[in-house]
Structures are given as structure tokens and as C-alpha cells.
Length: 252
Ligand SMILES: NC(=O)c1ccc[n+]([C@@H]2O[C@H](COP(=O)([O-])OP(=O)(O)OC[C@H]3O[C@@H](n4cnc5c(N)ncnc54)[C@H](OP(=O)(O)O)[C@@H]3O)[C@@H](O)[C@H]2O)c1
Image 1 (tube, helix red, strand yellow):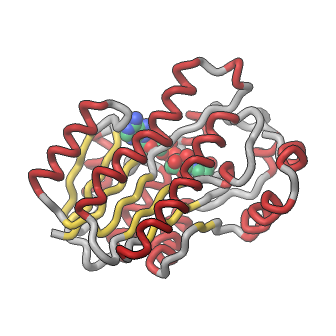
Image 2: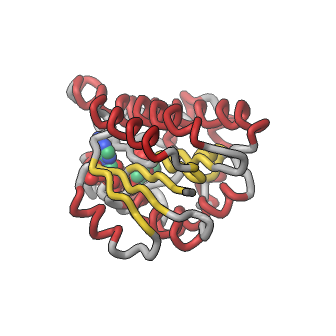
Image 3: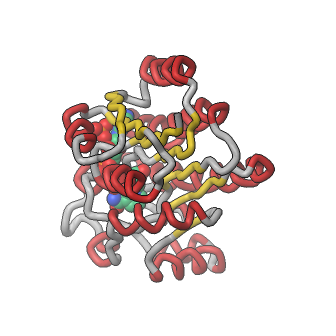
């Protein structure tokens, strides 16, 4: 049985990834939807014409990861597509954030993504795809989002290295790098109007469009994808200029 696994499917970009996967990947027979809020996942599942499996899991919890691992061992599916999308951020100076918030960002954005990828790899074959939701925050460090941008720099670096390693196996790894999107991410991060000049002024990405385009470029074997022309430009800028200057220009 060919399946897709999508983390963070209960809202925002993950929700759109699930709908787009159903539209674009005919070969996939079942979509496994992962997040903590079961009701949201069930509502999403009711909108998808393919078979779905709702997995209400906190993927920062070892017990939940063991549940997923056991399920994979039992079902032995062929994982055609893994979308590591769950993630969260917090706006604020590092000293103002709680140690727990910083730890939880590392656990969700880096650790869970890495562990789930490792868990899924034995069930992948040639032409399987891994899509990791990264961010424009990965291109250069962001003051006032120091931990979040560092977690996304990890996702970018990990995705590039893994893509290189998995080339002989014909498995593509794509790091998707959206700019700000109007999802639950912003309130969860404590970003409201007036809290950050950069977030108030930066162009918004549309999660539906990001999901649609990302699935298309993943199929073409692309490694890193920023959709909006402004963020393609920012990526180049962050490669050329010292990050001390980029950080001043893009202060969150
Ligand atoms: N929105 C932006 O401005 C923006 C920009 C660049 C990149 N991103 C990235 O895009 C990705 C998706 O974010 P979004 O914008 O769609 O935000 P969102 O609407 O808040 O979605 C986050 C998803 O992650 C899930 N999640 C959070 N903690 C979890 C946990 N411990 N275990 C399992 N699932 C968990 C949430 O579901 P539950 O609460 O139900 O668990 C939710 O489905 C994230 O990786 C984020 O860093 C967002």
C-alpha cells in the first residue's frame, strides 16, 4: 500500500499539503494525518476522497513516536511521500523566552523531524519524496527569533545533506522555505500587528499556493524552494552579504 505521511496536518500549511496530496498524487492510496488535535484531523479527513488514517500524536513525545514506529512495522506500507511539516516559533529576545519554549522548538522542529525521517526511510523506495517545511528564517539568523531561525537552519542543512546521500536511491528531499503565512503560526509565535515591523511589512505567502507548488517542484527533484520572488531574492542576498548586515536589514 502506497501512503503519504503528513505531520502538522491539523491546520495551516499541513492542512493544505494534505488536500493537495490527495489532488496531485493519484498513486497514493492512503494519507496518514498527524497532529495533536484529533477533531481537526477528522474534519480534514472528511474532505479527502482517498483513504485516510488519523493519528492524534504529540510527536515531541517518545511514546507517540514509538506508537508511529510500531504502526509502520505492523503495516509495512510503502511511503511514497513524507511531509515533515509540524513546527512552531516564538518571537522575543532569547532571554525573555522560557527555557521550555526553546527546548520544545528544538524537539519539534529538529528532533521529531529527524527521528520521523529515520523511522520512515526503510519504508521508502525509488521515487519516494521527502518534503521538509523549512522557512526563509533558515537563510540567515534572525534576532528575536534566534532559536526558531536556528532550528530552520538545521532543517535546511539536514535536507541538503540527506538529499545528497539519497540521490543514489532516487529519493528526493525538498526543503520548502515559505515567508510569513497567515496561519495559526503567527498567534502561536506571539506575532500580532505592531509586534514586529518586519512581519508587518513582509509580503505574505499563501499556504494553498505553497502546498500546490511545493508538491510540483518536489516531483521535479528540486532541493530548496522559496516560492515568492521577494524571498528568492532574499535567499541570494543572504548568500552574498555578511549575516551581520542581513540581520540589521531584516530585524524581526
Ligand atoms: N506561518 C508562517 O509564517 C510560517 C513561515 C515559514 C515557515 N513556517 C513553517 O510552516 C510549518 C507549518 O506551520 P503553519 O504556518 O501551518 O502553522 P500552524 O497552523 O500553527 O500549524 C502547525 C501544525 O503543527 C502541529 N503541531 C504543533 N505541535 C505539534 C506536536 N507537538 N506534535 C504534532 N503536531 C504538532 C499543529 O497541530 P496541533 O496543534 O493539532 O498539534 C499544526 O497542525 C511549520 O514548520 C512552520 O515553522 C510557517
